Amino acid sequence: MISDKKLETALKQYFGFSKFRSGQKEVIRNLLSRESTLAILPTGTGKSLCYQLVGKIYKKPVVIVSPLISLMQDQVEQLRFAGEKKVIALTSVLSFKRKEYAVSHLSQFDFIYLAPEMLNKKEVVENLFQLDLALFVVDEAHCISKWGPDFRPDYLGLGELRRELNFPTTLALTATATKRVEEDIIGNLFGTQKVKVIRHSVDRPNIFLAVEKVANQKEKNKKVIKLVERLKAPGLIYFSSKKKADEIAQMIRQKTKLNVSSYHAGRSAIDRYTVQQQFMLGKLDVICATSAFGMGVNKKNIRYVIHYHLPADLESYLQEIGRAGRDGQQSIAILLYQESDVGLQRRLIDMTLPEDEMIQYYMDNAQKLTGHAGEQGELLDYYRKQGLSSERVKEIFSRRRSDKIKNLNEILAYTNTHHCRRAYIKKYFGEKDNQIHDRSCCQLSGEELPLKELKMIKTEKENIKNFDDNSYQRVIRKLFNL
Image (cartoon, rainbow, N blue to C red):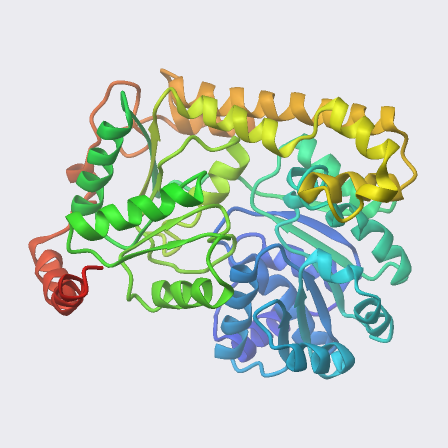
């Protein structure tokens, strides 16, 4: 067993840190003992370092299954910044030639990032079989439970892939998992195999929790402008609609001196990459984004996260507000609640889950519909290929619909609670709450936002700097009517 001193020496040698963060050493020790591990550690605690250091120590390749291009790009760039050259992300951003070369030369890379869908490609899997892996990693492992059944079913095949790879030591990472999600991850990924679970509190005490209720969209838009003008930047605003993300980004550009852009799956890969890099380099004050942005993106000084729309559930809400305050400094999460947002979430549930009639029709006519029935058809085709009957598929989606409605009711209960919001979240994730509520914890129902007390308001110096930095962008926008 490697000693603590040798571990700390390796940490300093490869990453320049003198000590581990909470949970890191425990996870790394498990992996070095060849024990597969599910690590549930709060956002901002450096989960990715766990597998990166193990890969460095073993000097063998690490395969990381990751859900989003933005996340993979961020991880690749962090590794390159740390001096790692043998790292690749197999994404749509790569040219065809570059991707083809990388797939046929996987043994030349120490860290290989890919989406679960990439594991459908025969040539990728065949080349993975040739590797002597240090680790198989599933980053943002809650996606197995939250996305697998009705959005990206390839997550459900990762357990079978582990078997085909002869059960490599595996690390599943997530920041948020209820006991139910934990069971889903273990069942799908590890089956009956032994797995160590390391769970730390989801709580991030430096993030003030707030809910601001608004009567209508006009009032909500005014609130957004007021907040982004007052709050220290940079910040993120999350939306459930790509169109609304674009609209509000444009509105902020027109009404303020801030640099702002939108990020969502409707923009080209190069646009998304450019926006992410501008944000990481401090060239943007605000990003208006859907959930396509931010998962695992390690920008330490995000001061606020605003939710323009009601999130689908508390897990995704915790994931998204966890982008704030990774430097440990005071930050704030504000959910703007309009009653009609509930209807939007209900419509999204209906849009993403096929009805019984659709399921039956597809299963009866699969041969002529394959490739012509859109995303829901692709989803149903996955279950058909697993040999499931129409009735079994209907049961799966009926349960999924019930789960989503239950999750929506939980975020509504959080929004409308008259008690401590932090205590509510801890209880939801099965944690005891020993903290005494105070004004730095959260906004109780009916209270004003204590922005001055939290020192979250921009100083005059910051306003002047923002004015100077943005003057030429404003002139260009005026000249070209942007």
